[in-house]
Length: 280
Ligand code: NDP
Image 1 (spheres, rainbow, N blue to C red):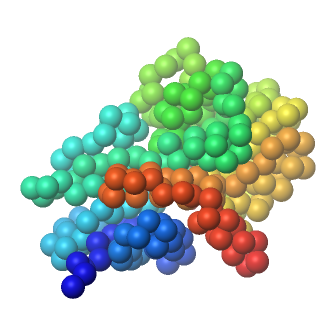
Image 2: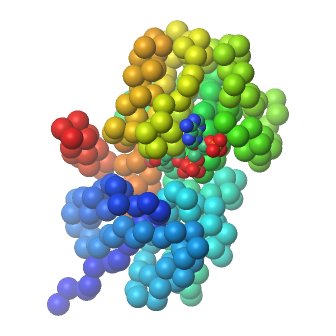
Image 3: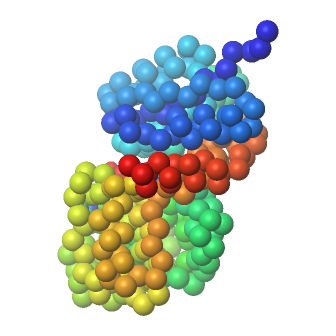
């Protein structure tokens, strides 16, 4: 008799369009690990109770997405060194006696996509990070670790940008710009859109002048949500333009490795999802 499949889930609100169940099922098939992976709609008010119930019912490792990553961090008995720096958790590893160890795989996932899938060298780049929410927080530290020369954070709500810069604590390398002052702020050779504007069907209002020649523009969103920013980047003359589908698959592979001790090959899952998104 075979053991019952390991049970996983992603918690978020809203969650109905999450691609994580499809990615993890694909990884399970590929590695021969029997698993079940559900998407659980969890508003912030009931997330803690839903997570406890999931564990009581035999749930194992879990992922957490918008808007629960800070709450998840606060629920953890332990966190990895990287998650401790970011203050946000997207991957929960069950501890043997109960409780959770929190990880943040968004940063490593983005770096893996940029460096390995797209062959980009991030060293000595001047980076403009648009947004200061959970995703920006999760990736900023990994980008600095990867060797970017400077990191400028611009967010609609300037206090949030200040708070992220303070948390990083590298005033020589990390700067803040007011969103409305970007028009006169110079240009960057690496721009990351970590806002949720695209997901909400809104366009970000930005001047072309911030895009330097040979710039790399990356949107953490993917599919239809990334269309407007990527079209804007091309029109502004960016040399390399990527969406966040690769990051999504890579951060999932990092989580899979934490739970199962094996990092799956990501190319097949990525290519299948890309074909689906392109055909949608
Ligand atoms: P949050 O809700 O935590 O933060 C949203 C951010 O977007 C804030 O900085 C907010 O600014 C900004 N924003 C929202 N609307 C606009 C707008 N119209 N113009 C300018 N700025 C805007 O979300 P997350 O940080 O968790 O997620 C951000 C995006 O990253 C989402 O699209 C998500 O899908 C994507 N993501 C992708 C991942 C991947 O693996 N590819 C992983 C994680 C996230 P303000 O503070 O002023 O409100």
